[in-house]
Length: 297
Image (cartoon, rainbow, N blue to C red; front, side, top):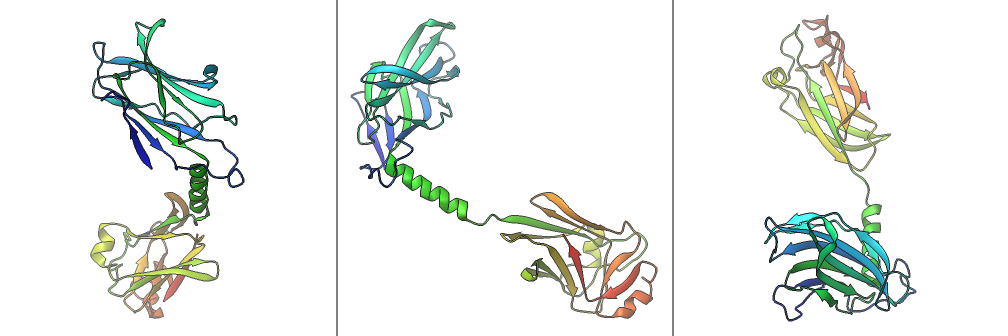
């Protein structure tokens, strides 16, 4: 849930993310409430070219700074521009008296001793507690902040677990070179089916009627399959006696080659329901013609 807090200044805006209530410690005891800082926006710059801005983030107790959690590098931000400092999630700590103090500083001439405090916000560990302005110039700009309490952490944890438990998918790409320098009519008018197998189980099959002579002569023919199963081999089949010639076949998984069946313009693979196709014009280029052939990964 997002809320907007206006502290009497039309340029100071803080956004909060969190539930209206904190769940029981028995549901989620660790980590403690945390904070994430997003964009910092300059509305009124006081330097030519932009303000040289950096952040200091403190852990405080009873209003006193006890630990500097983070100090960012200096970034020049011009009027009307925003910058994301990519602040990681910061825990408030286990003590309910601990708070986080966010300070936005303007570096003057590279001398940290004369830097100006532009903006300062203090957050308590309960997301019900709205941030309070401590010092500085709230008219200067805008800080986007997300506060996550224990209930929010629990929800994020559940979402993370659900995503983690989803099966990981892999993309398999089969590339078929059906062109040979020494023969003609390598393509086919028949339907070619490719079956993807995971061990003894067929995971999926895809067919194509587009392995023509012209298609084979112009480029390699490719088939893509996305699967959560580990594919071990593929089976290519034909449904007719118009022979189909395979000179080479490459298989890749997620962009990495995992298999290469390459004849390099020597003996190739013939798919045909007519075994005698291997005894005619292709007799010096294939050892047999079969209706299906397995290619292992």
